[in-house]
Image (cartoon, rainbow, N blue to C red):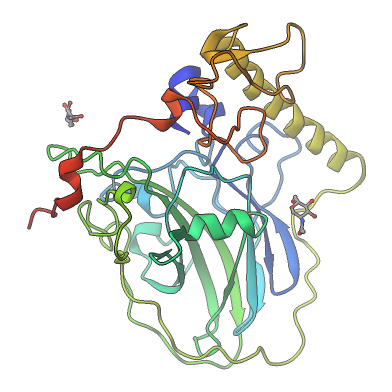
Length: 356
Ligand SMILES: *[C@@H]1O[C@H](CO)[C@@H](O)[C@H](O)[C@H]1NC(C)=O
Ligand SMILES: *[C@@H]1O[C@H](CO)[C@@H](O)[C@H](O)[C@H]1NC(C)=O
């Protein structure tokens, strides 16, 4: 992500990397707001998610209003997914960057009415995938391995109503880069919010936290150096609400409107997405990677969206190529170049403790 931001300078396009592609809520698939396409597509598409032009970029400041549901101004959801309490939600991300290691957290919050400010919503945590020190596997590693899909279960005992589901990944590759003046770590938060009407007969209203408020910039799970094998990971925010996870009762709702396009419109939408992605890769190619540039040999005239980087120097493969790319993208290589490795965290950070 950072490499693209640096070399492109067009954050709008570059920002389209930490996005949710679609949700399967209690068996029904809903496309997510796609920042690459939805702002420009006509006729306007209807989504269950809060979306904006910068919806792909990370949020760095946990005290900013953007920590709730990413950077506004938002297109509010025109649709609401329907789910039985106790049912499952599959969250399908676009390709996640291999080096953007960190946890995944999912929260739910009752949405009293559509005008409620997102920052006034009280959230409880329903799921987390953090870090296993024994295997050094992060939640995002499991996400990638699972075809960029993460599944959560809605507690079966919660009160029915309209909820915001807030699903967040936190990329910790630069999190050690603290700024004590700004009171920020270098952690990148990628929250995604979508609207779900939960049905059922539950009554539970778990204790809640607000965003901003739930996280502090120097929480042990946010201001952390992940490069010296953390012994443990301490999740920011509240513990997961355990409640009940009984199977849902009765049949799933028969949802008519999901926002999915069909026929010619679907083809037009898919074509625009391909064009936007190609535009991004072309920009990377042209900015960073003229023949030999960025440490890559590029075939003149080839399609940059599919062309692989061929390293000019085997010792330092390709400055811009590496694992800070979606796995499988043309710029992805096993051994990253210098620009992708980023500055090494200071050794002193190994024994560093947050300020109190
Ligand atoms: C993985 O995701 C891709 C893209 O959404 C999809 O086409 C493919 O069927 C998925 N594979 C599996 C095994 O689910
Ligand atoms: C920290 O943030 C302040 C205020 O935005 C900025 O002036 C300063 O350069 C930053 N320091 C570092 C080390 O990045």
